[in-house]
Image (cartoon, rainbow, N blue to C red):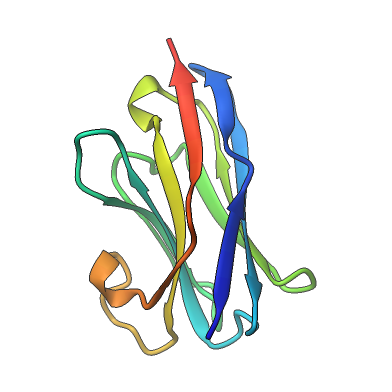
Length: 125
C-alpha cells in the first residue's frame, strides 16, 4: 500500500506563508488523486485542495481559493501545497490523502483510501 508523509507545518503569523509537502513511498503518485484536508480543534475534517496526477485537474475549497496553490513534482514524486496570506482560521492539522485515479468525488474525504499522519499549521494573529 502507499504510505504518505506530510511535512512543512509550523507556526506563522497571519499574512505569512507556508509550503507543505506530501511524499509517497511504496507507490508513485502516477495513478492517484492527491488531496489535502485539514481538521481544526473541535471541527470536522474539511477539504482544502486536490490534484489528479494524471492530467493535473485541480479543485480548491472556497475558503482557500486564491490563497493556496496545489502542485505536483513529477521528479520527486511529491505534491505540494503553497499556502499564502494565511489566516488564523487556517490553523489546523493538515493531512495528505490519496485516492484512485478514477475517483469522481475528489473533494470528499471518504473517497480517499490512504492518509498521512498530518502536520500541524498554526497561524497566529
